[in-house]
Every structure is written in structure tokens, then in C-alpha cells.
Image 1 (cartoon, helix red, strand yellow):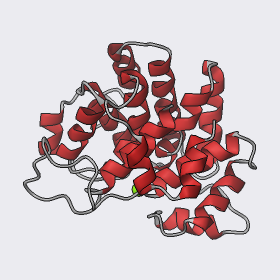
Image 2 (cartoon, helix red, strand yellow):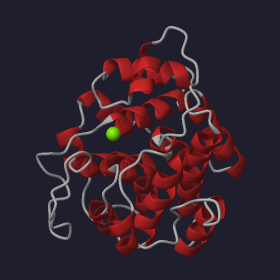
Image 3 (cartoon, helix red, strand yellow):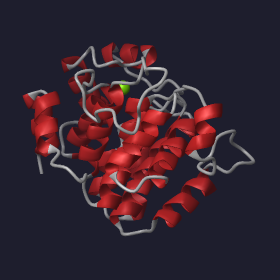
Length: 260
Ligand SMILES: [Mg+2]
């Protein structure tokens, strides 16, 4: 159930999105602390799930849930889109399309359907080619993990989509390099391959999140993007997620998450 991984990744990462301590003890700090909360990544992930379960199209479901949770941390353009009476895609290549797509990778078995629905979920706002690609690559990685593909196969796919001759940052660079050379941005084209790198260098959901804690990055969104891959690949979390989900989510969001 990749959506759970995305939500837990968002919640764990939220504590360091804007104010990561300079000398954070990333190995030992709490995965879930008093500084954590769910953010826009969780709300929009659950909106995509609602749309695919029949609660309107992507636009209607995102506007409905987004307006119910208006202060979840949306970017400026998305915030305007949420309020608009005639919402139109705005050419974004931001990581918002990748962070909300996990249900697509979780739900569809057919590869071409995964791609088609990922594209459709992105295109209502993020109709830039990189916005679309970020959603597709994220959903396909989740689908690959679900289908029992190896970590190397997932790595090779991400590298093929984000090759080093075209992109400054790719899945090839290790966390130690990224700690020194990468800093915060919100593009799909860095967030997706680097979140997948955090997964690639991990051996559990927890060590995946701790890799994210090492980077100066959009940590809740990195967690939401690759959290579903980590959950599917490791077959869970290594801890009972239910008390965490109940602690941080509203009853309404929890019910959407648990709806089979
Ligand atoms: Mg967020």
C-alpha cells in the first residue's frame, strides 16, 4: 500500500522541510517528533486516491480536499489553482505532481494504465513535460517495486529517465556527494531522482528516511515521492505505522487512507 509510505514519508520529512538543524544527528533523531505534521503532499495524495475511487475527476477531487485543508503548505500557484472557479494547468515542473501520485502505482497492475493515469493526475496542473515525467517515473517505480523488480532494475529505469548528460543531478550521485553539492529546490527533475537515490542507498523504510534527513532538501516531498517505493520494496515499515498515522492525521484523512 504505497500511499501509506508516501504519507509517512511526508510526516517524517515535514520536521526538516524548512528548518533543519545545522548539526542534525540524522542517525539517531526521532523519525516522528513533535515537529512533524502531515502537509500538502498527504492531502493531495489522498485527493488523487479519492478521484480514482470515483469521487470526481482529478481536478474536482483535488479542489474539494484542498479546500477542506487550505493551510497544508501549498505553493503559491497551486493555492491559486485550488481557489479558481475555472482551474487550468499552469505549466509547472515542480515536484507537486510526483508527490501525489502514489495511489496510481499502488492501484493499477497494468503498466500502460499506470503511465496513463500518472500523466492524467499530473496534467491538471503540472502539464510541463518535466512535471508529467516526474509523476510517471514515481508511479512506475512504485509499480516496479510492487511487481518484485530488483533495486538495480529500479535504479536503471530512473537513470534512463534522468541521464547524466541531460541532468545536473541524477540517481548516480551518492548521498555523501549530494550532502555537499545539492541544496533545496522544488523541481521534479531533481526531487524524483534524488528521492530515489535515498531509497537506493537504504535497507529499510527507516534508513531511507534517514538518508533524506542528511540532505538539505524538500524533505517531506522527498519522503512522499519515494516513501511508496520504500514501503512496497521492503514490504512494510519495520514498525507498526497505525499509531503514527492516527497520531498525525485527522480522522477524515485517516479514513480515506484506510479505505480499501
Ligand atoms: Mg509538503
